[in-house]
Length: 143
Ligand SMILES: [Zn+2]
Image (tube, rainbow, N blue to C red; front, side, top):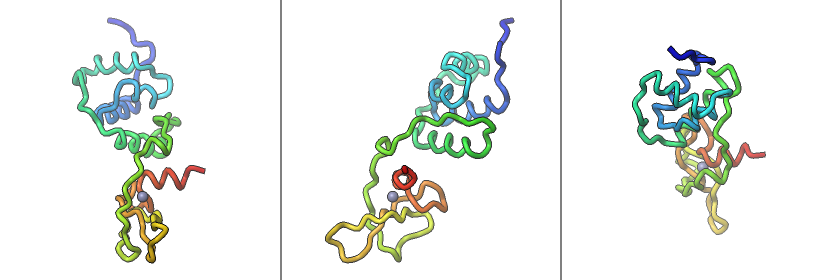
């Protein structure tokens, strides 16, 4: 039997599987796990007898997963998929009034110049208790 030089830890396998289940490519998984290459991911993929192809995933969901795990469960600094503000589509403001804001809606001000009342983005927050949607959160934390 062929020896595996650098065996996968259960943590790596857990992270890789979760990314895989969310449709991440071998490259994305490799980028997330320091020291792993796309080829080593594919090799592991076959040894674990995972399905040949994961369902096409939602990139935003994967990025959220990586972001969440890079600060909490993962012991090493995971390398997140490079994200720039411009990579996130600018959401269409729902122009929600201040009294209609809920804990789970984005409260980034989007008042048009000619409006007499303050209006807010109103899209779903990036996290259940977050103040901003994914785009505005990235914008706010940019600098
Ligand atoms: Zn927003």
